[in-house]
Length: 167
Image (cartoon, rainbow, N blue to C red; front, side, top):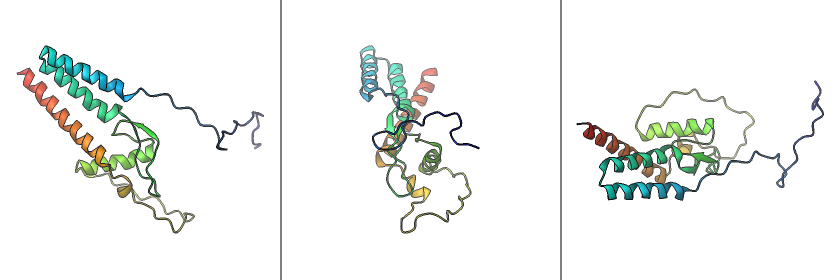
C-alpha cells in the first residue's frame, strides 16, 4: 500500500513544530453564571420565595457538578497535573482520565470500586522515572472535594425542601 495515495498535502506545521490541533470552542466566562445566581437569589429574597431559592441552589449544584469550566487535574503517570480543559468537577478530559477520576469519586463516596485488570507491563518504558499509580493520580484536590461536598449537601437540601413543599 502506498502512503499518501490521494496526493493530498499534509497539514502545515504550527509554530511549535507539531501538527496543527483543532481549535477549541470558546467558553463562557464564569461570571455569567454567578451573575445569574445572584439575580435568582435576589429575586428569591425580594419575592420571599423559598421555592425560587431552592431552584437557585439546585442550579448551583448542577453548575458545580457538570457545567463549571475547569481543568482535568488528574495526575499523569509522571506526576504533573493534566492541564486539559474539562466541563464540570465530575468529569475529566478523556476516557482514560475519566476512569481514574471515577475511581477517585467512588473512593470519596466510600463506594466499592470496579475491579479492573491491570494493564500489561510495558517492556519499553523509561526506567528511573517514578510512575504514579491510579490511586495516587486520582486523588481529588481539596478545592474539588470541598465543592463536591457542598454541592452534594445542597442537592440533599433541595430534595428535602421539595418533599417538604409537597406536603
